[in-house]
Length: 157
Image (cartoon, rainbow, N blue to C red; front, top):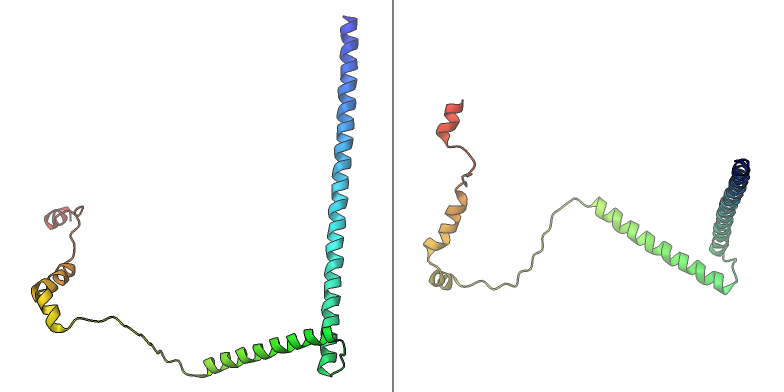
């Protein structure tokens, strides 16, 4: 019995030591992951600041281009692309203003190349009575099969 109790205590020490070690390694893993996430957030923040500086530098170069103070051919080509975009934007804005300034008129331009039969051919193909029959049928309201007859409705009231 004493041997059994000794074995049980030894197993308990191993389990508790293993659990403690596992808990410590899990804690270390989580701490490392927290640091990685924190560093990645810092990298994104610095990248955003760098991007803003690139934007500012580009605006300054373009401002110098407008004063004819840019000599670099690559920069001149990029500045010309921006000029082209600006011209396109101005043209589109002018079109928008013109559309908004004109009174609204609805113009419908329908082109229909369908050939219609002559009146005589239409009369020969289908008698006038048959042409009118489908219209008469569609004008009649359809009765619902589920609806009770009018007499039953009156009796219920």
